Amino acid sequence: MTPTEPATRRGAAARTVVRPPLPVKMVIAGGFGVGKTTAVGAISEIEPLTTEAAITEVAAGVDDLTHTPRKTTTTVAMDFGCLTIDPTLKLYLFGTPGQDRFGFMWDDIVEGAVGALVIVDTRRLDDCYAAVDYFEHKRIPFAVAVNAFDGRVEHALDEVRWALDVADHVPVVVFDARERGSVRDALLVVLELALARTETAGA
Image (cartoon, rainbow, N blue to C red; front, side, top):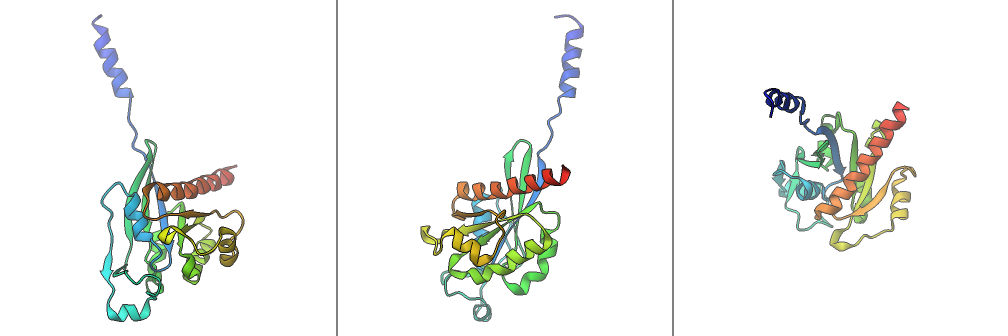
C-alpha cells in the first residue's frame, strides 16, 4: 500500500453520502368508522400516533353505530404513522377524523399531501360522498379503497364507482385495513397516481 492510498480511500468515503429518503405526505380519509385508524396502525413502522376518544352516549346519538356496534372510540383530530417504501422514499401518513363536526381540520391535515386514500364501507356509501367531493374539489389525486369488512363487500366495484360518481381515472380497489400488505398495495396505487400526475404536469 502506498502512502497516498489511505488518504484516497478517506476522500472516496467522504464523497459517498447516504441521502435520507424523500419525505412524502399522504392522507387516509373517509367517513366515520370505515377503518382509517386501523389502516394506519396496520402499516405504520412506528407506533402510530392516534387521537382516539371514547364514544360517549351523546356522541353515539350523533354518530351512526348501526354497522359498527363494537366501536368504542373515535378519532377526534388525526392519526399519524409512516412507512419506508424503499431507501429513496418514505411515506408520512395522516388520517383524518371521519365525523362532519371535525371537518374544519381537514384543510390543515391535507396541506402538502401528494394524494389520498379514501376508504369506503359499502354498507354506508353515503358517509363517503363528502371525502370524495373534497379531494375532487381540491384536485388532489386519490384512490377509493373499499374495505372488506368480515372479508366481503356488499357491492361490486363497478357499482361503487357508479354510486360515488367518480371518474374513470380514479382507481377503485378492494383492500383489508387490518392487513399490512393489503394496505401497502392500496397506498402504492395512490403513489403511482400522484407520480403520474407529476410527470404529466412536468411534460
